Length: 640
Ligand code: F3S
Image (cartoon, rainbow, N blue to C red; front, side, top):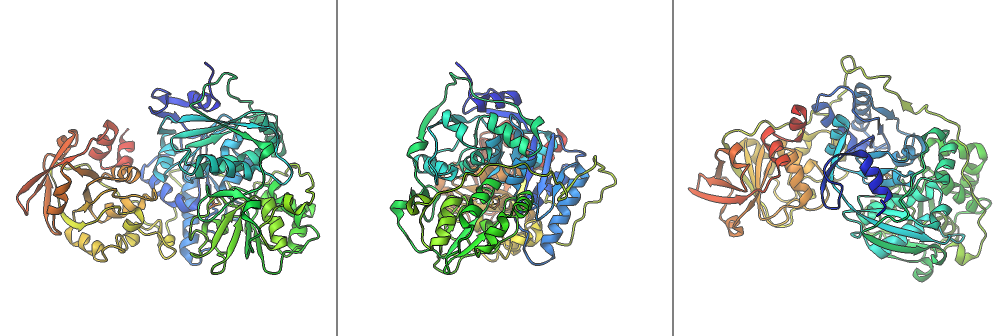
Protein backbone atom coordinates (compact mmCIF):
# COMPACT_ATOMS: atom_id res chain seq x y z
CA UNK A 1 0.00 0.00 0.00
CA UNK A 2 1.36 3.45 -0.95
CA UNK A 3 2.07 6.33 1.41
CA UNK A 4 0.32 9.63 1.96
CA UNK A 5 2.40 12.78 1.47
CA UNK A 6 1.94 13.69 5.15
CA UNK A 7 3.38 10.36 6.32
CA UNK A 8 6.25 10.56 3.81
CA UNK A 9 7.35 13.88 5.32
CA UNK A 10 6.81 12.66 8.90
CA UNK A 11 8.77 9.46 8.13
CA UNK A 12 11.70 11.58 6.94
CA UNK A 13 11.68 13.37 10.28
CA UNK A 14 10.88 10.61 12.77
CA UNK A 15 13.22 10.43 15.75
CA UNK A 16 11.28 8.14 18.07
CA UNK A 17 8.06 6.15 18.10
CA UNK A 18 5.99 4.15 15.64
CA UNK A 19 4.44 6.18 12.84
CA UNK A 20 0.88 4.96 13.12
CA UNK A 21 -2.30 6.92 14.03
CA UNK A 22 -2.68 7.33 17.78
CA UNK A 23 0.94 6.48 18.64
CA UNK A 24 3.20 8.97 20.43
CA UNK A 25 5.99 10.09 18.08
CA UNK A 26 8.88 12.53 18.24
CA UNK A 27 9.88 14.30 15.02
CA UNK A 28 12.79 16.50 14.00
CA UNK A 29 11.78 20.14 13.52
CA UNK A 30 13.59 21.99 10.71
CA UNK A 31 12.14 25.46 11.23
CA UNK A 32 10.30 27.42 13.91
CA UNK A 33 8.41 30.68 13.90
CA UNK A 34 7.10 32.86 16.68
CA UNK A 35 4.98 35.98 16.71
CA UNK A 36 5.31 38.66 19.38
CA UNK A 37 2.12 37.96 21.31
CA UNK A 38 3.25 34.44 22.25
CA UNK A 39 6.91 35.14 21.50
CA UNK A 40 7.97 36.97 24.65
CA UNK A 41 7.06 33.94 26.75
CA UNK A 42 8.72 31.56 24.26
CA UNK A 43 11.99 33.49 24.48
CA UNK A 44 11.82 33.77 28.28
CA UNK A 45 11.49 29.98 28.29
CA UNK A 46 14.34 29.60 25.81
CA UNK A 47 16.53 31.81 27.99
CA UNK A 48 15.67 29.68 31.01
CA UNK A 49 16.98 26.60 29.15
CA UNK A 50 20.41 28.24 28.94
CA UNK A 51 21.26 27.04 25.45
CA UNK A 52 23.69 28.57 22.97
CA UNK A 53 22.55 28.42 19.35
CA UNK A 54 19.12 27.06 18.41
CA UNK A 55 19.18 23.51 17.05
CA UNK A 56 16.84 24.13 14.12
CA UNK A 57 17.94 24.87 10.53
CA UNK A 58 16.07 28.16 10.71
CA UNK A 59 14.09 30.01 13.38
CA UNK A 60 12.37 33.35 12.84
CA UNK A 61 10.89 35.79 15.37
CA UNK A 62 8.17 37.89 13.73
CA UNK A 63 6.59 41.02 15.17
CA UNK A 64 3.09 41.33 13.77
CA UNK A 65 0.46 41.17 16.50
CA UNK A 66 0.95 44.04 18.93
CA UNK A 67 2.43 46.67 16.65
CA UNK A 68 0.17 49.55 17.63
CA UNK A 69 -0.24 49.32 21.41
CA UNK A 70 0.52 52.50 23.26
CA UNK A 71 2.98 52.54 26.14
CA UNK A 72 6.58 51.45 26.45
CA UNK A 73 5.67 47.83 27.31
CA UNK A 74 5.04 46.99 23.68
CA UNK A 75 8.31 48.41 22.40
CA UNK A 76 10.18 46.75 25.29
CA UNK A 77 8.73 43.38 24.26
CA UNK A 78 10.00 43.87 20.71
CA UNK A 79 13.46 44.88 21.92
CA UNK A 80 13.63 41.88 24.27
CA UNK A 81 12.70 39.48 21.45
CA UNK A 82 15.26 41.10 19.15
CA UNK A 83 18.06 40.73 21.69
CA UNK A 84 17.27 37.07 22.51
CA UNK A 85 17.01 36.34 18.77
CA UNK A 86 20.48 37.76 18.23
CA UNK A 87 21.89 35.83 21.18
CA UNK A 88 20.65 32.45 20.00
CA UNK A 89 20.90 32.72 16.21
CA UNK A 90 17.24 33.52 15.42
CA UNK A 91 16.21 35.85 12.56
CA UNK A 92 14.21 38.89 13.69
CA UNK A 93 11.48 40.36 11.46
CA UNK A 94 10.80 43.99 12.41
CA UNK A 95 7.29 45.36 12.98
CA UNK A 96 5.93 46.61 9.66
CA UNK A 97 7.41 43.75 7.64
CA UNK A 98 4.13 41.90 7.59
CA UNK A 99 2.19 38.95 8.98
CA UNK A 100 4.27 35.97 10.13
CA UNK A 101 2.60 33.31 7.97
CA UNK A 102 2.60 35.35 4.77
CA UNK A 103 6.24 36.31 5.35
CA UNK A 104 7.29 32.75 6.13
CA UNK A 105 5.62 31.48 2.95
CA UNK A 106 7.35 34.14 0.86
CA UNK A 107 10.80 33.92 2.34
CA UNK A 108 11.58 30.72 4.21
CA UNK A 109 9.06 27.89 3.78
CA UNK A 110 10.39 24.87 1.87
CA UNK A 111 8.57 21.80 0.52
CA UNK A 112 9.17 18.68 2.60
CA UNK A 113 10.39 20.53 5.70
CA UNK A 114 8.80 20.59 9.16
CA UNK A 115 7.80 23.89 10.76
CA UNK A 116 6.61 24.42 14.34
CA UNK A 117 5.09 27.80 15.21
CA UNK A 118 3.72 29.42 18.36
CA UNK A 119 0.64 30.50 16.42
CA UNK A 120 -2.35 28.37 15.54
CA UNK A 121 -2.27 29.35 11.85
CA UNK A 122 1.24 27.99 11.28
CA UNK A 123 -0.33 25.31 8.98
CA UNK A 124 -0.37 28.05 6.30
CA UNK A 125 3.04 26.57 5.35
CA UNK A 126 1.22 23.42 4.18
CA UNK A 127 0.45 25.36 0.99
CA UNK A 128 4.12 24.87 0.09
CA UNK A 129 4.12 21.15 0.90
CA UNK A 130 5.42 21.46 4.46
CA UNK A 131 4.26 19.75 7.63
CA UNK A 132 3.62 22.99 9.50
CA UNK A 133 2.10 22.71 12.98
CA UNK A 134 0.89 25.29 15.50
CA UNK A 135 1.88 24.52 19.10
CA UNK A 136 2.13 25.97 22.58
CA UNK A 137 4.97 28.38 23.33
CA UNK A 138 6.92 25.95 25.49
CA UNK A 139 6.82 23.30 22.74
CA UNK A 140 8.29 25.82 20.33
CA UNK A 141 10.99 26.85 22.83
CA UNK A 142 11.87 23.16 23.31
CA UNK A 143 11.95 22.65 19.52
CA UNK A 144 14.47 25.51 19.28
CA UNK A 145 16.54 24.09 22.14
CA UNK A 146 16.45 20.42 21.11
CA UNK A 147 15.29 20.43 17.48
CA UNK A 148 12.42 18.01 18.21
CA UNK A 149 8.68 17.94 18.93
CA UNK A 150 6.50 15.15 20.31
CA UNK A 151 2.92 14.58 19.19
CA UNK A 152 0.31 11.89 18.70
CA UNK A 153 0.59 10.61 15.13
CA UNK A 154 -2.55 11.90 13.38
CA UNK A 155 -4.92 10.16 10.98
CA UNK A 156 -4.80 11.44 7.40
CA UNK A 157 -7.94 12.67 5.62
CA UNK A 158 -7.90 12.82 1.82
CA UNK A 159 -9.69 15.80 0.32
CA UNK A 160 -9.91 15.19 -3.40
CA UNK A 161 -10.40 18.31 -5.48
CA UNK A 162 -12.19 17.72 -8.81
CA UNK A 163 -12.66 20.19 -11.68
CA UNK A 164 -11.78 23.90 -11.54
CA UNK A 165 -13.20 26.93 -9.80
CA UNK A 166 -15.52 29.26 -11.70
CA UNK A 167 -14.70 33.01 -11.88
CA UNK A 168 -15.55 34.81 -8.60
CA UNK A 169 -15.19 31.55 -6.65
CA UNK A 170 -11.89 31.28 -4.81
CA UNK A 171 -9.75 29.26 -2.42
CA UNK A 172 -11.59 30.84 0.54
CA UNK A 173 -14.82 29.30 -0.74
CA UNK A 174 -13.11 25.90 -0.95
CA UNK A 175 -12.10 25.95 2.72
CA UNK A 176 -15.46 27.41 3.81
CA UNK A 177 -17.10 24.49 2.00
CA UNK A 178 -14.78 22.00 3.75
CA UNK A 179 -15.63 23.67 7.10
CA UNK A 180 -19.34 23.37 6.32
CA UNK A 181 -18.87 19.65 5.65
CA UNK A 182 -16.47 18.70 8.44
CA UNK A 183 -17.28 21.37 11.11
CA UNK A 184 -14.87 23.08 13.53
CA UNK A 185 -14.25 19.77 15.30
CA UNK A 186 -13.90 17.63 12.15
CA UNK A 187 -10.13 17.85 11.87
CA UNK A 188 -9.12 17.07 15.47
CA UNK A 189 -6.28 14.53 15.54
CA UNK A 190 -6.03 14.57 11.73
CA UNK A 191 -3.93 15.92 8.89
CA UNK A 192 -5.98 17.14 5.93
CA UNK A 193 -4.19 16.21 2.71
CA UNK A 194 -5.36 17.73 -0.60
CA UNK A 195 -5.11 15.69 -3.80
CA UNK A 196 -6.77 15.39 -7.23
CA UNK A 197 -6.64 17.17 -10.58
CA UNK A 198 -8.19 20.32 -9.06
CA UNK A 199 -4.97 20.95 -7.10
CA UNK A 200 -3.29 22.11 -10.34
CA UNK A 201 -5.70 25.01 -10.70
CA UNK A 202 -4.73 26.46 -7.32
CA UNK A 203 -1.68 28.70 -6.82
CA UNK A 204 0.51 28.37 -3.71
CA UNK A 205 -1.20 31.38 -2.14
CA UNK A 206 -4.63 29.82 -2.85
CA UNK A 207 -3.40 26.61 -1.23
CA UNK A 208 -2.06 28.57 1.74
CA UNK A 209 -5.50 30.16 2.28
CA UNK A 210 -6.93 26.64 2.48
CA UNK A 211 -4.26 25.20 4.80
CA UNK A 212 -4.40 28.35 6.96
CA UNK A 213 -8.07 27.73 7.79
CA UNK A 214 -7.43 24.05 8.38
CA UNK A 215 -6.75 25.42 11.88
CA UNK A 216 -10.49 26.20 12.12
CA UNK A 217 -11.21 22.51 11.45
CA UNK A 218 -9.12 21.76 14.55
CA UNK A 219 -6.70 19.80 12.33
CA UNK A 220 -3.09 19.09 13.34
CA UNK A 221 -2.18 20.55 9.95
CA UNK A 222 -3.12 20.51 6.24
CA UNK A 223 -0.83 19.82 3.30
CA UNK A 224 -0.77 20.20 -0.49
CA UNK A 225 1.60 18.47 -2.93
CA UNK A 226 4.62 20.40 -4.21
CA UNK A 227 4.37 20.71 -8.03
CA UNK A 228 4.94 23.11 -10.96
CA UNK A 229 2.85 25.78 -9.23
CA UNK A 230 5.12 25.50 -6.19
CA UNK A 231 8.14 25.91 -8.45
CA UNK A 232 6.59 28.94 -10.12
CA UNK A 233 5.82 30.55 -6.73
CA UNK A 234 9.34 29.96 -5.45
CA UNK A 235 10.79 31.37 -8.69
CA UNK A 236 8.76 34.55 -8.22
CA UNK A 237 10.28 34.83 -4.74
CA UNK A 238 13.79 34.28 -6.14
CA UNK A 239 14.04 30.91 -4.35
CA UNK A 240 13.94 28.36 -7.17
CA UNK A 241 16.64 26.30 -5.45
CA UNK A 242 14.27 25.57 -2.54
CA UNK A 243 11.95 23.54 -4.78
CA UNK A 244 11.45 19.79 -4.33
CA UNK A 245 8.58 17.95 -6.09
CA UNK A 246 6.46 16.00 -3.59
CA UNK A 247 3.23 14.04 -3.75
CA UNK A 248 1.42 11.09 -2.24
CA UNK A 249 1.76 7.65 -3.83
CA UNK A 250 -0.98 6.85 -6.38
CA UNK A 251 -2.27 4.03 -4.17
CA UNK A 252 -1.89 5.84 -0.84
CA UNK A 253 -4.32 4.66 1.82
CA UNK A 254 -6.21 7.33 3.77
CA UNK A 255 -8.22 7.09 6.98
CA UNK A 256 -11.11 9.22 5.66
CA UNK A 257 -12.08 10.86 2.36
CA UNK A 258 -14.02 13.90 1.17
CA UNK A 259 -14.57 14.86 -2.47
CA UNK A 260 -14.93 18.54 -3.38
CA UNK A 261 -16.33 19.33 -6.81
CA UNK A 262 -14.77 22.72 -7.52
CA UNK A 263 -17.04 23.36 -10.55
CA UNK A 264 -20.15 23.33 -8.42
CA UNK A 265 -18.91 25.72 -5.70
CA UNK A 266 -20.37 29.24 -5.46
CA UNK A 267 -19.18 32.17 -3.28
CA UNK A 268 -19.79 31.31 0.37
CA UNK A 269 -19.77 33.14 3.71
CA UNK A 270 -19.32 31.95 7.30
CA UNK A 271 -22.09 33.62 9.27
CA UNK A 272 -21.88 34.81 12.89
CA UNK A 273 -20.39 33.47 15.10
CA UNK A 274 -18.53 30.40 13.86
CA UNK A 275 -16.32 29.64 10.84
CA UNK A 276 -18.37 26.50 10.08
CA UNK A 277 -21.73 28.30 10.04
CA UNK A 278 -21.52 28.48 6.25
CA UNK A 279 -24.05 29.24 3.52
CA UNK A 280 -23.89 30.68 0.01
CA UNK A 281 -23.80 34.47 -0.36
CA UNK A 282 -26.88 34.10 -2.57
CA UNK A 283 -28.88 32.27 0.12
CA UNK A 284 -27.87 34.70 2.87
CA UNK A 285 -29.17 37.58 0.76
CA UNK A 286 -28.29 41.25 0.41
CA UNK A 287 -27.80 42.31 4.02
CA UNK A 288 -26.62 45.89 4.54
CA UNK A 289 -22.99 46.12 5.62
CA UNK A 290 -21.07 48.72 7.64
CA UNK A 291 -17.47 47.60 7.44
CA UNK A 292 -15.28 45.48 5.16
CA UNK A 293 -11.83 44.37 6.32
CA UNK A 294 -9.46 42.69 3.85
CA UNK A 295 -6.20 41.09 4.98
CA UNK A 296 -5.02 38.72 7.76
CA UNK A 297 -2.82 35.66 7.35
CA UNK A 298 -5.67 34.02 5.42
CA UNK A 299 -6.19 36.47 2.56
CA UNK A 300 -3.48 39.12 2.24
CA UNK A 301 -1.32 37.68 -0.55
CA UNK A 302 -0.25 39.59 -3.65
CA UNK A 303 -2.80 37.81 -5.87
CA UNK A 304 -5.60 38.38 -3.33
CA UNK A 305 -4.90 42.09 -3.13
CA UNK A 306 -4.37 42.50 -6.88
CA UNK A 307 -7.85 41.03 -7.41
CA UNK A 308 -9.22 43.51 -4.88
CA UNK A 309 -7.42 46.39 -6.65
CA UNK A 310 -8.80 45.27 -10.03
CA UNK A 311 -12.35 45.22 -8.63
CA UNK A 312 -11.97 48.64 -6.96
CA UNK A 313 -10.25 50.32 -9.94
CA UNK A 314 -12.30 53.28 -11.13
CA UNK A 315 -15.08 52.50 -8.58
CA UNK A 316 -16.13 54.11 -5.31
CA UNK A 317 -16.52 52.44 -1.92
CA UNK A 318 -20.17 52.75 -0.83
CA UNK A 319 -20.74 55.86 1.34
CA UNK A 320 -22.01 53.76 4.27
CA UNK A 321 -19.07 51.34 4.22
CA UNK A 322 -15.64 51.63 5.84
CA UNK A 323 -13.20 49.52 3.80
CA UNK A 324 -9.86 48.75 5.46
CA UNK A 325 -7.07 46.78 3.80
CA UNK A 326 -3.94 45.40 5.47
CA UNK A 327 -1.41 43.86 3.06
CA UNK A 328 0.34 40.67 4.14
CA UNK A 329 3.89 41.90 3.66
CA UNK A 330 6.09 44.87 2.89
CA UNK A 331 7.08 43.21 -0.41
CA UNK A 332 3.45 43.03 -1.51
CA UNK A 333 2.83 46.65 -0.55
CA UNK A 334 5.99 47.81 -2.35
CA UNK A 335 5.07 45.87 -5.50
CA UNK A 336 1.54 47.31 -5.51
CA UNK A 337 3.00 50.79 -5.07
CA UNK A 338 5.25 50.15 -8.09
CA UNK A 339 2.54 48.80 -10.40
CA UNK A 340 -0.16 51.36 -9.53
CA UNK A 341 -2.58 48.94 -7.81
CA UNK A 342 -2.14 50.78 -4.51
CA UNK A 343 -3.31 54.01 -6.15
CA UNK A 344 -6.38 52.20 -7.50
CA UNK A 345 -7.22 50.99 -3.99
CA UNK A 346 -6.69 54.35 -2.29
CA UNK A 347 -8.58 56.26 -5.03
CA UNK A 348 -11.65 54.10 -4.42
CA UNK A 349 -11.92 55.44 -0.86
CA UNK A 350 -10.36 52.47 0.94
CA UNK A 351 -8.07 52.84 3.95
CA UNK A 352 -4.69 51.16 3.80
CA UNK A 353 -3.49 50.08 7.23
CA UNK A 354 -0.22 48.58 8.43
CA UNK A 355 1.15 45.25 7.12
CA UNK A 356 0.24 43.41 10.31
CA UNK A 357 -2.48 41.34 11.99
CA UNK A 358 -4.28 44.58 12.92
CA UNK A 359 -8.06 44.19 13.05
CA UNK A 360 -7.82 40.37 13.09
CA UNK A 361 -6.52 40.53 16.65
CA UNK A 362 -8.61 43.56 17.59
CA UNK A 363 -5.71 46.03 17.17
CA UNK A 364 -7.86 48.86 15.89
CA UNK A 365 -10.71 48.84 13.37
CA UNK A 366 -13.33 47.44 15.73
CA UNK A 367 -16.66 47.93 13.93
CA UNK A 368 -19.31 50.28 15.31
CA UNK A 369 -21.91 48.96 17.76
CA UNK A 370 -24.32 46.50 16.19
CA UNK A 371 -22.42 46.60 12.88
CA UNK A 372 -22.28 44.02 10.11
CA UNK A 373 -18.63 43.51 9.19
CA UNK A 374 -17.40 41.40 6.25
CA UNK A 375 -13.91 40.12 6.85
CA UNK A 376 -11.54 37.98 4.80
CA UNK A 377 -10.12 36.62 8.06
CA UNK A 378 -10.34 33.15 9.58
CA UNK A 379 -12.33 33.61 12.80
CA UNK A 380 -15.64 35.30 13.56
CA UNK A 381 -16.21 34.35 17.20
CA UNK A 382 -18.42 36.75 19.12
CA UNK A 383 -16.44 39.77 20.31
CA UNK A 384 -13.17 38.91 18.51
CA UNK A 385 -13.52 42.07 16.42
CA UNK A 386 -13.52 44.09 19.65
CA UNK A 387 -17.26 44.87 19.33
CA UNK A 388 -19.40 42.44 21.29
CA UNK A 389 -22.64 43.05 19.39
CA UNK A 390 -21.11 43.14 15.88
CA UNK A 391 -21.99 40.42 13.35
CA UNK A 392 -18.89 39.25 11.47
CA UNK A 393 -19.15 37.32 8.18
CA UNK A 394 -16.06 35.60 6.73
CA UNK A 395 -15.80 35.86 2.94
CA UNK A 396 -13.29 35.80 0.07
CA UNK A 397 -11.42 38.97 -0.99
CA UNK A 398 -13.45 39.09 -4.22
CA UNK A 399 -16.78 38.97 -2.36
CA UNK A 400 -15.50 41.52 0.17
CA UNK A 401 -14.44 44.01 -2.52
CA UNK A 402 -17.65 43.76 -4.60
CA UNK A 403 -19.75 44.09 -1.44
CA UNK A 404 -17.76 47.15 -0.32
CA UNK A 405 -18.78 48.92 -3.53
CA UNK A 406 -22.43 47.83 -3.43
CA UNK A 407 -22.93 48.44 0.31
CA UNK A 408 -24.62 45.05 0.75
CA UNK A 409 -23.40 41.46 0.97
CA UNK A 410 -23.18 40.28 -2.62
CA UNK A 411 -20.69 38.60 -4.94
CA UNK A 412 -19.39 39.03 -8.48
CA UNK A 413 -21.49 36.13 -9.80
CA UNK A 414 -24.67 37.80 -8.59
CA UNK A 415 -23.68 41.24 -9.86
CA UNK A 416 -22.52 39.69 -13.18
CA UNK A 417 -19.24 41.53 -13.57
CA UNK A 418 -16.07 40.24 -15.19
CA UNK A 419 -12.91 39.77 -13.16
CA UNK A 420 -9.54 40.24 -14.88
CA UNK A 421 -7.12 37.30 -14.68
CA UNK A 422 -4.46 37.97 -12.03
CA UNK A 423 -1.15 36.14 -12.02
CA UNK A 424 1.77 36.10 -9.62
CA UNK A 425 4.73 38.37 -10.24
CA UNK A 426 8.44 38.41 -9.62
CA UNK A 427 9.40 40.20 -6.45
CA UNK A 428 12.51 42.23 -5.89
CA UNK A 429 14.35 40.58 -3.00
CA UNK A 430 14.36 42.93 -0.02
CA UNK A 431 15.44 41.93 3.45
CA UNK A 432 15.76 45.40 4.91
CA UNK A 433 13.16 44.49 7.53
CA UNK A 434 15.17 41.47 8.71
CA UNK A 435 17.84 41.56 11.41
CA UNK A 436 20.22 38.63 10.89
CA UNK A 437 21.89 37.16 13.94
CA UNK A 438 25.30 37.02 12.17
CA UNK A 439 26.34 33.78 13.79
CA UNK A 440 25.53 33.45 17.43
CA UNK A 441 27.38 35.21 20.18
CA UNK A 442 25.73 33.97 23.34
CA UNK A 443 28.48 35.26 25.64
CA UNK A 444 28.65 38.82 24.38
CA UNK A 445 25.03 39.54 23.50
CA UNK A 446 23.13 41.18 26.30
CA UNK A 447 19.43 40.32 26.61
CA UNK A 448 17.53 43.60 26.93
CA UNK A 449 14.82 43.24 29.54
CA UNK A 450 12.89 46.46 30.04
CA UNK A 451 11.05 47.00 33.33
CA UNK A 452 7.99 45.11 32.05
CA UNK A 453 9.89 41.92 31.29
CA UNK A 454 10.41 39.61 34.22
CA UNK A 455 12.20 36.26 34.30
CA UNK A 456 10.25 33.09 33.70
CA UNK A 457 9.03 31.60 37.02
CA UNK A 458 10.80 28.35 37.88
CA UNK A 459 9.93 25.44 40.10
CA UNK A 460 12.46 23.25 41.91
CA UNK A 461 13.00 19.49 42.38
CA UNK A 462 10.03 17.77 44.00
CA UNK A 463 10.84 17.65 47.75
CA UNK A 464 10.36 14.60 49.96
CA UNK A 465 7.24 16.10 51.60
CA UNK A 466 5.01 18.66 49.86
CA UNK A 467 3.07 20.62 52.45
CA UNK A 468 0.64 23.32 51.38
CA UNK A 469 -2.48 25.23 52.41
CA UNK A 470 -5.88 25.17 50.61
CA UNK A 471 -6.28 28.68 49.16
CA UNK A 472 -9.25 28.15 46.82
CA UNK A 473 -12.23 25.83 46.64
CA UNK A 474 -13.36 26.30 43.02
CA UNK A 475 -16.46 25.01 41.22
CA UNK A 476 -16.94 23.04 37.99
CA UNK A 477 -15.78 24.15 34.51
CA UNK A 478 -13.23 26.72 35.66
CA UNK A 479 -11.72 28.14 32.44
CA UNK A 480 -8.14 29.23 31.85
CA UNK A 481 -9.62 32.71 31.45
CA UNK A 482 -11.10 32.45 34.98
CA UNK A 483 -7.65 31.45 36.24
CA UNK A 484 -5.66 34.09 34.33
CA UNK A 485 -7.71 36.72 32.47
CA UNK A 486 -6.21 38.08 29.23
CA UNK A 487 -8.22 41.20 28.47
CA UNK A 488 -6.85 44.37 26.87
CA UNK A 489 -5.95 45.67 30.37
CA UNK A 490 -3.58 42.75 30.93
CA UNK A 491 -2.36 41.96 27.39
CA UNK A 492 0.68 44.27 27.59
CA UNK A 493 1.88 42.30 30.63
CA UNK A 494 2.19 38.87 29.04
CA UNK A 495 5.91 38.84 29.83
CA UNK A 496 5.42 40.02 33.41
CA UNK A 497 4.09 37.08 35.43
CA UNK A 498 4.60 38.80 38.83
CA UNK A 499 2.29 41.65 37.71
CA UNK A 500 -0.25 39.31 36.07
CA UNK A 501 -0.38 37.07 39.13
CA UNK A 502 -2.11 39.88 41.07
CA UNK A 503 -5.13 39.25 38.82
CA UNK A 504 -5.07 35.45 39.09
CA UNK A 505 -8.64 34.18 39.74
CA UNK A 506 -9.82 37.77 40.19
CA UNK A 507 -13.21 37.00 38.57
CA UNK A 508 -13.86 34.20 41.07
CA UNK A 509 -12.12 35.30 44.22
CA UNK A 510 -10.42 38.70 44.47
CA UNK A 511 -8.46 37.61 47.57
CA UNK A 512 -6.75 34.65 45.88
CA UNK A 513 -3.34 36.11 45.14
CA UNK A 514 -3.03 37.76 48.56
CA UNK A 515 -3.94 34.48 50.29
CA UNK A 516 -1.28 32.68 48.23
CA UNK A 517 1.36 35.20 49.24
CA UNK A 518 0.48 34.72 52.91
CA UNK A 519 0.38 30.91 52.65
CA UNK A 520 3.67 30.54 50.76
CA UNK A 521 2.86 27.00 49.54
CA UNK A 522 -0.67 26.48 48.22
CA UNK A 523 -3.25 23.95 46.99
CA UNK A 524 -6.30 24.55 44.81
CA UNK A 525 -9.36 22.29 45.11
CA UNK A 526 -11.23 22.15 41.79
CA UNK A 527 -14.45 20.64 40.41
CA UNK A 528 -15.05 18.93 37.07
CA UNK A 529 -13.25 19.97 33.87
CA UNK A 530 -10.81 22.23 35.69
CA UNK A 531 -8.80 24.46 33.27
CA UNK A 532 -11.05 24.18 30.21
CA UNK A 533 -10.86 26.73 27.36
CA UNK A 534 -7.81 28.27 25.72
CA UNK A 535 -4.39 26.64 25.96
CA UNK A 536 -2.83 29.68 27.66
CA UNK A 537 0.26 28.75 29.63
CA UNK A 538 -0.16 31.80 31.86
CA UNK A 539 -2.96 29.93 33.65
CA UNK A 540 -0.29 27.57 35.01
CA UNK A 541 2.58 30.08 35.27
CA UNK A 542 0.76 32.62 37.47
CA UNK A 543 -0.26 29.92 40.03
CA UNK A 544 3.33 28.59 39.88
CA UNK A 545 4.64 32.08 40.68
CA UNK A 546 2.16 32.33 43.57
CA UNK A 547 3.37 29.07 45.12
CA UNK A 548 0.70 26.58 44.02
CA UNK A 549 2.21 23.11 44.48
CA UNK A 550 -0.70 20.87 43.53
CA UNK A 551 -4.32 21.02 42.36
CA UNK A 552 -6.84 18.33 43.35
CA UNK A 553 -9.90 18.30 41.09
CA UNK A 554 -12.76 16.03 40.05
CA UNK A 555 -11.32 16.13 36.50
CA UNK A 556 -8.95 18.26 34.38
CA UNK A 557 -9.11 19.68 30.85
CA UNK A 558 -6.33 17.98 28.84
CA UNK A 559 -4.16 20.93 27.82
CA UNK A 560 -4.28 22.66 31.18
CA UNK A 561 -3.29 19.39 32.87
CA UNK A 562 -0.20 19.28 30.60
CA UNK A 563 0.57 22.93 31.29
CA UNK A 564 0.46 22.26 35.05
CA UNK A 565 2.86 19.32 34.66
CA UNK A 566 5.11 21.45 32.42
CA UNK A 567 5.31 23.85 35.39
CA UNK A 568 6.00 21.07 37.91
CA UNK A 569 2.54 21.48 39.56
CA UNK A 570 0.84 18.15 40.33
CA UNK A 571 -2.67 17.70 38.86
CA UNK A 572 -4.38 15.09 41.07
CA UNK A 573 -7.87 13.67 40.56
CA UNK A 574 -10.14 12.66 43.48
CA UNK A 575 -10.71 8.89 43.48
CA UNK A 576 -13.94 9.60 45.30
CA UNK A 577 -15.60 12.77 43.92
CA UNK A 578 -17.53 13.26 47.17
CA UNK A 579 -14.21 14.04 48.94
CA UNK A 580 -14.33 17.40 47.10
CA UNK A 581 -16.91 18.71 49.59
CA UNK A 582 -14.88 17.88 52.67
CA UNK A 583 -12.14 20.49 52.17
CA UNK A 584 -12.17 23.99 53.59
CA UNK A 585 -10.10 27.09 52.95
CA UNK A 586 -7.04 27.09 55.19
CA UNK A 587 -6.80 23.27 55.52
CA UNK A 588 -3.16 22.22 55.71
CA UNK A 589 -2.36 19.27 53.39
CA UNK A 590 0.72 17.14 52.91
CA UNK A 591 1.95 14.60 50.34
CA UNK A 592 4.54 12.48 52.12
CA UNK A 593 7.32 10.66 50.23
CA UNK A 594 6.24 12.62 47.15
CA UNK A 595 9.04 11.48 44.76
CA UNK A 596 8.20 7.81 45.26
CA UNK A 597 4.42 8.36 45.40
CA UNK A 598 4.30 10.12 41.97
CA UNK A 599 5.48 6.90 40.37
CA UNK A 600 2.31 5.14 41.61
CA UNK A 601 -1.17 5.38 40.10
CA UNK A 602 -2.53 6.46 43.47
CA UNK A 603 -1.16 9.33 45.53
CA UNK A 604 -2.25 9.74 49.13
CA UNK A 605 -2.86 13.26 50.40
CA UNK A 606 -3.15 13.82 54.14
CA UNK A 607 -5.35 16.62 55.49
CA UNK A 608 -3.38 17.56 58.61
CA UNK A 609 -6.08 19.96 59.82
CA UNK A 610 -8.88 17.37 59.60
CA UNK A 611 -6.75 14.30 60.34
CA UNK A 612 -7.96 12.45 57.22
CA UNK A 613 -6.17 10.73 54.32
CA UNK A 614 -7.50 10.96 50.77
CA UNK A 615 -6.70 8.84 47.72
CA UNK A 616 -6.09 10.62 44.44
CA UNK A 617 -5.42 9.33 40.93
CA UNK A 618 -2.38 10.53 39.07
CA UNK A 619 -1.65 8.16 36.13
CA UNK A 620 1.44 10.08 35.06
CA UNK A 621 3.45 8.83 32.06
CA UNK A 622 7.21 8.28 32.46
CA UNK A 623 7.90 11.58 30.71
CA UNK A 624 5.47 13.37 33.04
CA UNK A 625 6.99 11.76 36.14
CA UNK A 626 10.41 12.99 35.04
CA UNK A 627 9.10 16.54 34.61
CA UNK A 628 7.37 16.51 38.00
CA UNK A 629 10.47 15.19 39.77
CA UNK A 630 12.64 17.89 38.17
CA UNK A 631 10.17 20.72 38.80
CA UNK A 632 8.87 21.17 35.25
CA UNK A 633 9.67 20.72 31.61
CA UNK A 634 12.40 23.34 31.32
CA UNK A 635 14.41 21.86 34.19
CA UNK A 636 13.95 18.37 32.70
CA UNK A 637 15.15 19.54 29.27
CA UNK A 638 18.17 21.29 30.78
CA UNK A 639 19.31 18.10 32.46
CA UNK A 640 18.80 15.93 29.36
FE1 F3S B 1 -2.42 37.42 12.87
FE2 F3S B 1 -5.02 36.96 12.75
FE3 F3S B 1 -3.37 35.42 11.51
S1 F3S B 1 -3.88 37.58 14.56
S2 F3S B 1 -1.45 35.46 12.62
S3 F3S B 1 -3.70 37.57 11.07
S4 F3S B 1 -5.17 34.78 12.67
